Length: 316
Length: 271
Image (tube, rainbow over all chains, first blue to last red; front, top):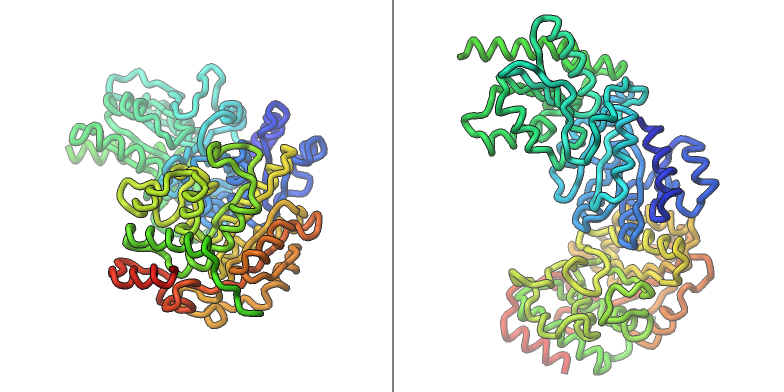
């Protein structure tokens, strides 16, 4: 996904002279072809993230479309004020390519885990927040990104992610995709973002084997959220479950809840949010290990869905 | 350094406009505004290429007031040059005004970037200078910063990069009045040796009396001093300059609700 994203920066740069790449201190040889072909539009500025974001803003004020790239937390934590003031207040078309969204950097520990980035970024006026589910969908996002008017936070997954998106679903920033439509009259609906959509689809298979036909809706764009899709699915749902690779406070599930509470009030469906707790992760290992600790593996998601359904049925 | 020359009528006139703005807005950063007047006056009178009736003219030089709290001085110059009517100054900080306590690019003709949070102007100016280089424009970029402001690490990140890129079109101007909000810079966060710091980051430093119009003209017109190197103009200034009872006094960094008799005394000092 990361490679696809960066390859597309080069591709877009060949199409459009406004496209510029700015990295911090990334892998040697990164975008080497772009560097060789258009050295004036390839920058590697070292570990100066505040400067990278401000510099991107300066270029965007002059009509360029900078794609800035560093580790997710260095945008969301280190350079937050530059993101807020230089990019969002000025509403500039700078794209932040955020490496290691969520729990990707599991072995590196909590300094590198982007667990609250979605909450932070979606709180900013004018910011668009996207987390596609695989490399093919990344291509569709990048193609659509060029003329998107304001700043955009692009959360990257680990890479080598299973491809579940399909071209026939189409792609538009801000529009959710129904990946699996239940035939039930009042189905359980799983709503997910990023690679959690893949886990949600696998969970749906497990649930199907147990006789439960659930819908899965993929929100590659967390902001602007596709409110209409949330409501369309939620109105008929017996249970809505949101799944995300980040903390619950202010994250994707929180965004969905906001829509449901505002639009449906007491008529909103039963809801369960699967997300990280309000704590810094204490373990290392692989991303998958942390998925297991936080109940984000497909079988765990399926079990949580059934437990939530059971709990609500007992309460009713 | 020799004593600053006396303020001429234009400098006093611009300061009277600043007092008018402070009075009508009932607040403002007095000390920071007064130390900046000659720097901005010389930039707008003698250095910058711009078209007040066409603020977006692409061939213009870019000027970013990174110490956004000194905005009254900028508003006065922009009004004086005709970017907006002088009467607009009277709306300073009022509910529907375009002129807030920090300048916003989306609202005010002639303002290149919204500033206020410190340490943002130099990275943005660096990006603008690189953009000019990429598009083959010969626009220059001037970024005016406060001495307290350059405590910010982001300033030095951008300085490293500007040095690396050899951006002769970029000039950093430091309003070195030696007093930050909490007290003297020497006590709060000593900047010395300041010229050496800029030189070490790849800039060519120049020191000048920031109230000496002729000297400022000479220095700012000459930028870049060395081709292929950004310039740092360290302007030795007096916080509150022109208002004797406010000069060198950290208490005058920001004031609100100045009594009519104080305003009268300020005007009196600027006759």
